Image (cartoon, rainbow, N blue to C red; front, top):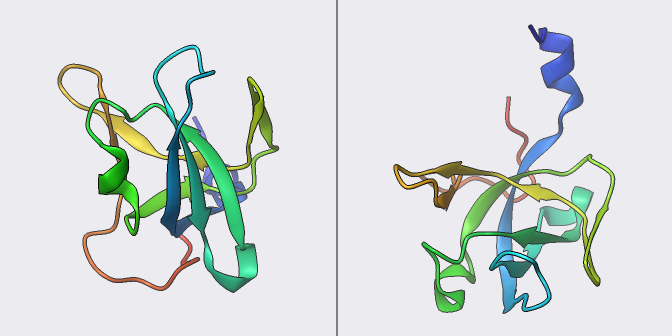
Length: 110
């Protein structure tokens, strides 16, 4: 079992997708996201396997949650700096985790 101190080690913040591109080099269909987390955390990149539910045109401006304090991860030729969070639907296709209203960029999940 994890304890509250384990949870508090994760820095999960809200950001706004400012750019999304196809990621043809990925082993599984994915997008390369550029996400703005506000002035404290800044702009970060993420690889996300969300092509089943989202078109590129759907993503610009979308608020998402991501873990921002994991080490960067090399995904083929791309460096993914944050882990964008999602949940599987009934067919195991990923849906992004997003707040249901306006919150400031960089707001931390508690």
